[in-house]
Length: 140
Ligand code: GDP
Image (cartoon, rainbow, N blue to C red; front, side, top):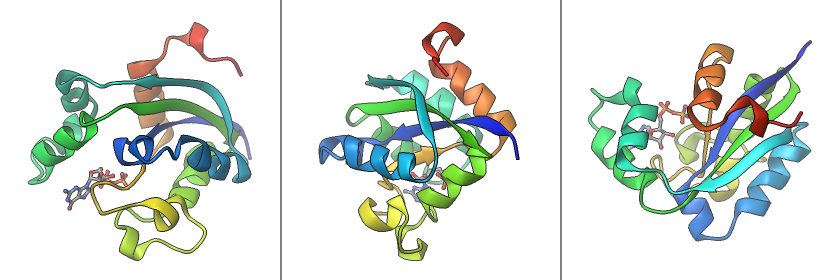
């Protein structure tokens, strides 16, 4: 299997509870390497653009409001089959359905405040990485 990249966000519920390190530790223990990282306060326009695919969903406004409610940490992760490895360690969207040993099982507060974002395909990973990082900020 190939070494690939994915995109991760440590969401405001986690930065508020000072869990950036704890979440990153679980990502690293899952075989992922942080090759770019920065803490940002997303603007409403950025959050709406980032989650544009969800624009028609009933929870869109709540989700955007949550994502701008505090700082986030955006990261590029690298590893064997990184998209799938990250989705495995993240756990199910709804923490009530998340498996033991996953980040969302350990830390998520609700289906919305669920601690982490992770790309769901390599194509989306490339788009999401480019949304926040220039190539010279990624040090593999
Ligand atoms: P993910 O890929 O596991 O993050 O899940 P989705 O792409 O389906 O949803 C994106 C994000 O929207 C989730 O991570 C949650 O933060 C939020 N979300 C998803 N479903 C719901 C919902 O039913 N209600 C609310 N309030 N937020 C949701």
